[in-house]
Length: 359
Image (tube, rainbow, N blue to C red; front, side, top):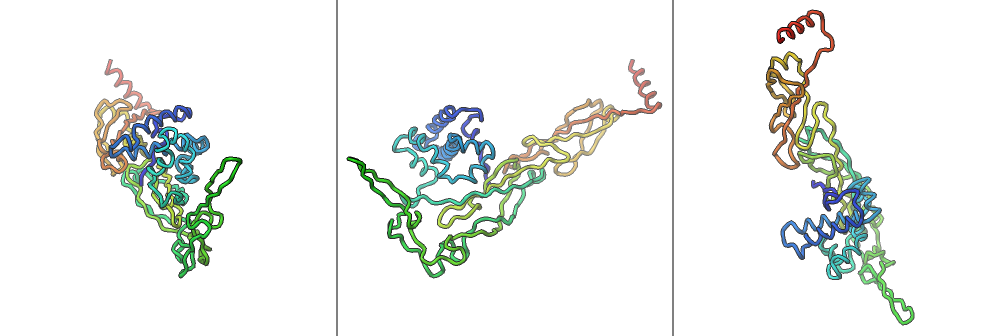
């Protein structure tokens, strides 16, 4: 399960950056990582990442949705093609006719079945879950029953009654599109439109499946298993192609929104955790060994004599790991010295004698 990076971070801009600043920064990065210019193994992935980030942040509506809801808001509302359509002019302007929108789209998602065909994609699904700090340390296996659109098990997604097949649309000859020519004075204009007979599918179902009514999919429940990796942080993570299913197309993704719950004992900062240990002023003065809790159990630490309030003791390797790594951060124990609020007469006399002995 891979986490998407923040789009602003990807482009190296801030939320306060203007559209012109975002565009200028994208141009700079795109020219650096374009696969035709940069032959390194990582260039292609960098180029995909910055192009997607720019396609969203350059569009006023998509940027507003992203600022409010993050990746889940954009992924749940737009297909990949929808996201990139808004930046079509900028891509063409930057890379020219030979490397314009269609070239960019193909370099990011691969070529589709034909020049007039683009695969449909199922919508993404957002699933929210809470994890503990212990889950962050060890990771967690998840198994959920997810309600979503699934392929029809009767027709296996074809939409046809078992034993029958789709027929090629005679109007568009299976292209899914028709060309229309209009004459205006001395000029003739040709437009390409989705076929109204097959609705752009290129084929027609003569005998629909009785279970899904020819849709090839239906509402259902599917058991989904995935791993929450160790070191996970609050944010959105993607389980590829486990969203709503699309017959003959690409399944959407499952967006897992993870929130790490506050721990009753520890506070987390990245890979490190922090713990406050209360001790008496006598223990601070004389020193002693004490047991403190860790995510692995308990650990013995030594409080040196004369320890001052807010003294920090480090337990190396007792923090949490970076995501998908075995290397762990540290645990920092802060010594909190408790000063009695009320003393009896005998205790006061002892402290006064102690004070006089230091004069």
